[in-house]
Image (spheres, rainbow, N blue to C red):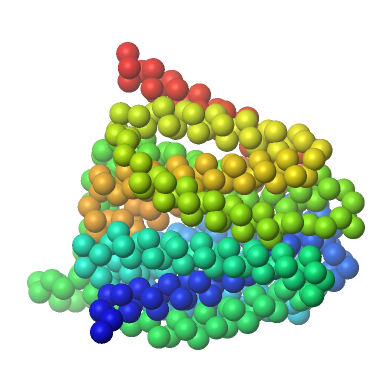
Length: 412
């Protein structure tokens, strides 16, 4: 007989697997700038992609506040429906404005993932946290791997074109949404639906919940160790999302000849698989990160900065692919360690809250980066290569310098 917690974990994981079956994503830039739409590459990078970033930031605030209030499941269902809408708009619309609306729904889709990652903590006992966390993460990685391989095979063997891949995404989103209704509702939650007898009215429950949220955030970030790792979590995630978002335009720029075969799907699949293995490695190795953490942050930030600059300046697309894979693998390795180290120093009940808060800070930095580099409010007139050089030099080399200074101060 399958235990209830395992059955619940499997239901959630299958939903996570289905929602990641988006074989169109590794080739989305080629689709948007292709003959199916009358949109230029500059419009995609400067007027379309930033909408998703800004929408994600704003909507993450809303989702962050109401996930616990609405008890998770409604937002997971919303995640599915937003996936259906954005994939449908990609298929059946052609205008620039419709594409910008599509990015808003994609922002909802991304923001609502907070509910997916935290739902399981409200349904299982604390001693199951580590195992169900690994289940949910593994299902996401499995979905991305299958998605990348599927997209690459269909494109390489010309079974489908870039637009037709969106039909698979649309179907997977419908299946994920249907499956989300099988998730059991959450009766009690951490903040707004706690089983406490003296709380009687909804108003009292609400303000008690807000007060408890503030208390947990204050307690967690009063620890300097949590702050140091959270800084890397926020800035590292910010840069990873930025690099990932605009990598396809860079590949397109490096290739130049649109007739060449693209291996975007294979690259994403390799990165996902490698990310899975390095995440396992990060969990296996036994190192006292409270002593070696500063050195890890300095080395990884420096390497990532150098790798981004090499990928941005090379004229060989395979070198660019390899740089992206190595950079992403380093990120997955460190973010696994970061998450574990933060989790060790905060209360179990505050896992979702602290990681959600750190993600929100990451989105603030990414929005600022997009505003300065992509939307070019200072009229720097940077092309895509120069933008990546900025990401490499500023986001990582400067970040490594900051951690080096902190390390030397601590040593002194």
